[in-house]
Image 1 (cartoon, helix red, strand yellow):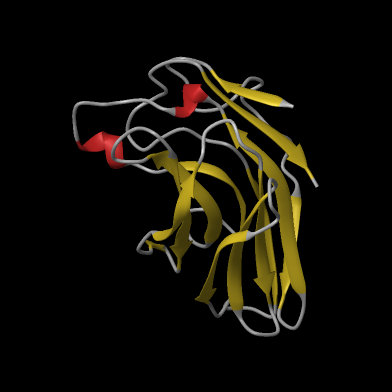
Image 2 (cartoon, one colour; image 1 turned 120 degrees about the horizontal axis):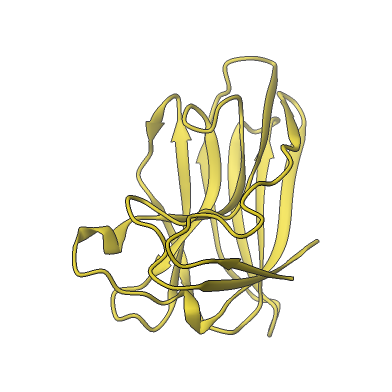
Length: 176
């Protein structure tokens, strides 16, 4: 399925997604897996520091997204040839340092999984290349959620930082 973020927008059309609740419990696991392919259109250039702003791919929140949320982030790499994929988090109301995972090739499928592990109190980011099934990177972030039972919602594709999409950006995805 193609998702297009139109020029001067932040979300794909339709710009809304039905809120899907997420239940995170201590002692339990929750994960989201998607196959994603960035097309050539995901490369863009701003002539200022907004070039380094993080776009969001998908993830989930625990309560409000600006308080506790865990997502894959993306942006063009420095030489504009690949897409840098990161872990992007708000934890206890603070944006944590970006977890750089790896750089994807354009027009290639990768499988992305983000998992909350309430047994080990961590969030795990995994990316696997669909060409050779090799794991490109795994990052694990320790977290402790405030309550034993936490309600949040799924988070979807979003462009920005401060600026809106400079041109139509097409990202293909398949939900696992």
